[in-house]
Length: 379
Image (cartoon, rainbow, N blue to C red; front, side):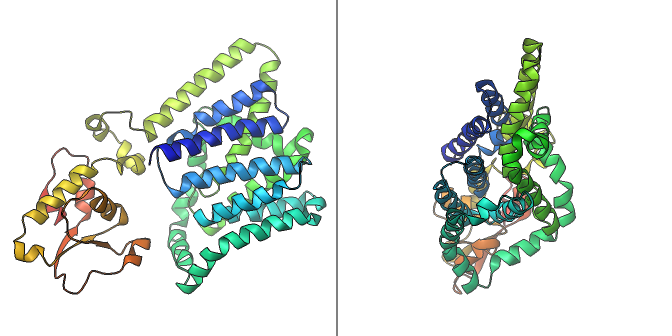
């Protein structure tokens, strides 16, 4: 659960370097781009095994392939685009934002050779065929993804307000100008004219996320392109003079950015010290990785305290899948665990004969950072 996302994000860092190379960047530009990615939000993402990590990897792979194709690369690479997009769509539907953006970018930039290419259409067919089982399941089960999307859109104002802060943090608190320079280069430089459809695609994808009220990170995968392009711009700036000073400044900014991101997203502080800060409320994803053994032990203690006659008819009801999962993974001798949260609902309600309920309440989640578990909070 740690190695896989680490490998995925390490792959993204390398791909950012490859994109810089295929955009015409020097060896130094490739290194600058890869370092920018390595100390960015990809650093924190590499510690979590969620659907987001594979999504970020697929966006980077597709961007890299498209960079090569738009520069006149082997048209058979469209097959790889289709396969990558198909895998990505089985993981998350957010790749549709990029697909829509690419279609608009190709049209606005008048890249008619893409429209006429049978390989490009083959890529779309391949992706659609791989996505078809997902769509079939959605149709049979009443389109739960649309229901979930509508619920997320209910927080549209909050989601939109988080876009700029997230982009700033993810691209590096002190290195975000590299991405900004990359975006400007892709959209405005004559040297980047071949890849302008990708810049348009990224902007369109972000606009679609904003209009739909989706979460702020849904289209953040496009920053891989701008980190790569930013490395080229940065390299040219360094080449104008005062190289040591500029490289030292970049290095210091990279260390500071990476350090802050590590502090926010990685377990670099002792738990006791971490619990005394505002970080748990600032970045809940990190706090939600702490205290599960104590949490499970508390529930086990509650269950053990029940009379044997009741235990035989007991079920555990959790408010969320994040509470239900550790009870199954780490719990020993516990009754069946159920939850109606999101897709955990698929496993159904408890059997009718389970008439005693141990309800895992929200208060227990809030107290996981404490060193002392309170059984009453879990029952």
